[in-house]
Image (tube, rainbow, N blue to C red):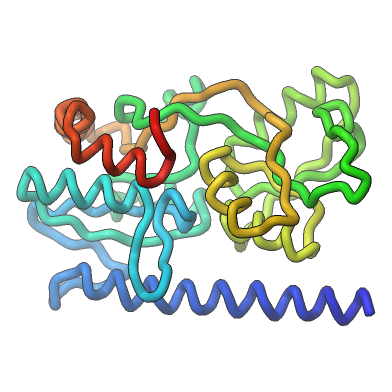
Length: 271
């Protein structure tokens, strides 16, 4: 029976992922002009943006594209009359390589500001503050779970996630190894769904991502913090300072508007 349930879970996650990808491809094509290719770079003054697949980044529901970052970048570009070409991704390493290669101007993902990353990339001003949490299935005995309980345990994260550095530091703090599996195929949203289905034990993602998904999966718990608060920003290549300054000016102006307040409240509740 357990084997059958596991297979059923895998079929379900594959169906969800396939439906999501197909809907996103269809929706993103509609957002592009007729001469643009989904996996290519739009030329001219078009802003090429890559957004991570997630409820907060970019997702689809009933053929409608949504996500805090997706809505925010579109509102900014609409306000400043700048055309934008949006691509979706689930593999952060691949997106950053393409940023360095010049395919994307901006990469938007579950990326906290760290000193190591600032050596290689430009960060915009902070969009909001978040922190990393552990997402696991609820214990049938409802006992409390702490960071110390992760000693000798295994955690799943997306390949290239900066959570790996934090988990390494946490293992040193508790004095025992925490094993990390970097999944090369799935992003934060998919790993949370796999956790809910029982295909993996637990995952570490940002709390705002987790909150949106735990609301849909009642068997999940995300009450165990893994990191302190961290600034969340968008990433640009080191040689794009002028664009970074422009984005910061746009963001700082937009953050004082009622449009931004409504957008933030829609996804995160009152500030």
